[in-house]
Length: 231
Ligand SMILES: Cc1cc2nc3c(=O)[nH]c(=O)nc-3n(C[C@H](O)[C@H](O)[C@H](O)COP(=O)(O)OP(=O)(O)OC[C@H]3O[C@@H](n4cnc5c(N)ncnc54)[C@H](O)[C@@H]3O)c2cc1C
Image (cartoon, rainbow, N blue to C red):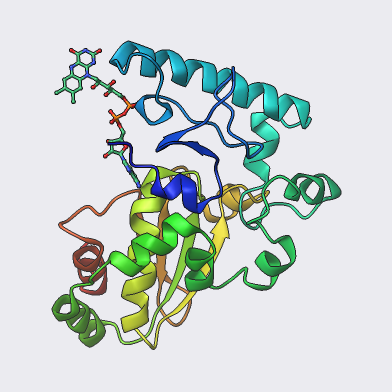
């Protein structure tokens, strides 16, 4: 049973319940490709799906080349990326990136998270550990947290939405977020891996940083260890 509801919702043309594709697995919507069992075909086999995937990748590369976009340039269009005319030109193909809006939201972690559907879903799904957050509050009532993230980074997708949800409970804490793709960010914060969460006290002194994934059982527990000066 093809699970094509999502495609239908996006306005992708179906043939029966399967996604209709062309020679390079392109759908009716420019820039969206489909591969594998979901596209029907004579034989629904693993090797056919893999071949479809390769064709779709070739189709996607051709599509990007035709737009004059390289992978390196695409990386720059991440949220909060440089506001050069080049980035503005690229905005055309990534309509969800509203550069103007992104600029005004630059320092707001929650807005950053809600601006991406995947991050947003992670945020909505996450149930923070309130008990542990209360312990954090007791130890460290105010703090500032700097997040360095990128939408394309899997560990960011996993952890940044959770941190935003946790911060909803830490009302006295302030937050800012910076895109790893912004020029100078890595050097400025001395960041080599993302996400990096830098926790500062109210005087701006660094108390600790959580890098990539929590060292303990959860972000909450890592925050508690930092609050207890035991990280
Ligand atoms: C019992 C059985 C035996 C088989 N034996 C063989 C065999 O011996 N040799 C062979 O070559 N092939 C075999 N096949 C077929 C092979 O498994 C499929 O052709 C192949 O797995 C298709 O790969 P796919 O990536 O297109 O789809 P799938 O492997 O079905 O992957 C699709 C993925 O998308 C996920 N998904 C669906 N909807 C959503 C959504 N809305 N959001 C996020 N994720 C979603 C699904 O959970 C799934 O993980 C067999 C299939 C079955 C059922």
